Length: 228
Image 1 (cartoon, rainbow, N blue to C red):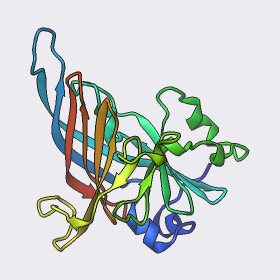
Image 2: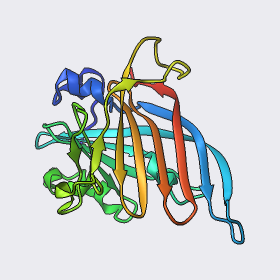
Image 3: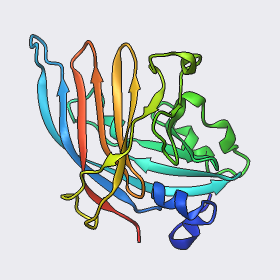
Image 4: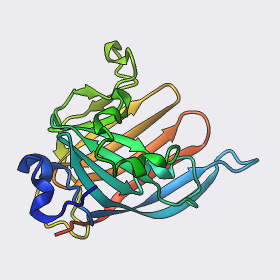
């Protein structure tokens, strides 16, 4: 296992890819938002205001793949009232620009195995773990459940919306100026998840809504800090 930082961080990535989703150790994002959770006997539930941090803990490169261990992916808050600890997840980047989200909460041994040069990173991701394909292009689909890529309604796949101006003027750590952003939607019969992604910054917004039970997450970026 080895650490990457500074210029070495981009050794296995193109400069464009490295700037599209900055994943150097020490980089972090701070979000504010709210959660809505169920309360027995209530039809509207409880609203909890939250401040949440996602940070890059460590990074390794092997077999042409980049694996970033992050603490506090926004989805950790789903189905909670905010009283949760940030979990460790792996963001795995392939050379073709695909990113996979691999939670470790159900199998913490993955983190120990990462240290072994004999552990194949290629065996980690499944197609349905893919949540991002860079560069983004409107109408693209990825991370589909088996067979869902043939659906006409776009459900059970991540679908990229058209580019639009990012609203980042009040975000600490981001210099003033125009910035494009994309919304990525993942819709199922039970729930929907939306990511707002700005190349060069990362995830600037996250939301989750269940269509039956009261379970909602709404986050927007308020701080962004690179490791440099």
